[in-house]
Image (cartoon, rainbow, N blue to C red):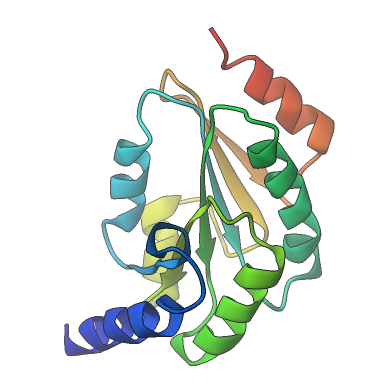
Length: 161
């Protein structure tokens, strides 16, 4: 508990100067976080993207996600770094450089990462990038590997009523 509290304080202090608070807060991803993220996005298209600083395909798809958000599409984007807590400075630099500013940002805050992955998806063995496309009806489509921009756009168009 103290470790998670320390992480929250560090993340808030590290990001407070960079930009408006709403866009720069990085939240600790712990047990129960995925369910909370899904619930918070209920009723509108939601993309939940798991990535890592050491994953070139993860970094390559960030401009695709940024383009989707900047297109004005009514979609919620949540980006979750699966990196270790000691990588927080690099995570923050990577997010600042590549990630869409309007994305909600989280970082794994449990050393038992297998438990976090299992809670997200019992079939997820850790491959990245891993993206969950959650429709307005709650249906979840899982994508492993680099997202196909045209397929993502087509999915999003199917969410518009």
